[in-house]
Length: 326
Image (tube, rainbow, N blue to C red; front, side):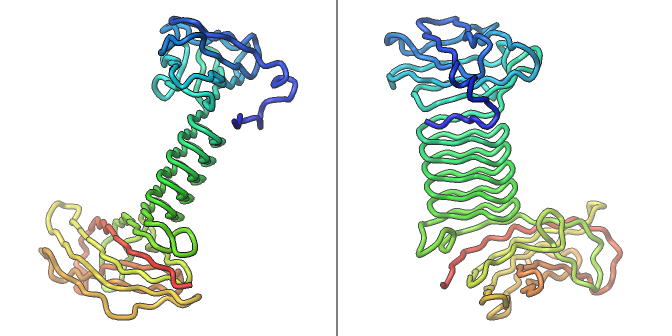
């Protein structure tokens, strides 16, 4: 069982408070300690805290407390209620001896900092949450569930088995997937050799621009760079693009399909992409797919050959099937 001890001094751990909960409407008593070990007595089934004072008040603002459930019976459930001198992410409901809840006293309430549920998990990021087995949520506000997953990106989410969500607000699921880019969704179908070498990804790109004869990239987070392809990797991609004039007038929509390859440091398109126009109020708006060797990215670009001077908003959802060939 792993307890977040980075901010708890050894003497505090040695003097951990203990409490046996034997019924409902309880108040947890930490006795001014940093760690409270809780055991559930008997076989009541569900033990619910007081709805007004779930935990005794802290010593002073900044008092940190880690509550560890050491009950041995999987039949028992503890519920620490939210809004009961507590600010939790909903009622904290757990039922095994590998669960812990880390809080800090803000002067009037216990505020949840991190929590886990399951076996051999680690939720070290601020406001991180983890459940299942062998998972790590080291990114702030990250969430992990399943087995042997890691989410170390800010607000990242990993679920399934042996997946990695390292990009900001990324999501990795399935088995052996890697979501290493900002806002990337990845789903793996296991691997050949390394994590992410056989997976599907999705990227939602956007850009507000007044298109002209110079290509403008509809990039990630309104940037001028699209999704980056890893070395020795090939993609089949499908980009669904929509643009609207900000005055609510013209709409331009298209689907772009193609292939991208990166051999070592060289990014190329083995064949020309196919562009299918879905709707075009302005026939001068043209979408293209570009293999950007400088940024090692797939760029969906837009031009307006007549320089119409009309401001647009564009969104491109790019679906990628990925394979790594080394």
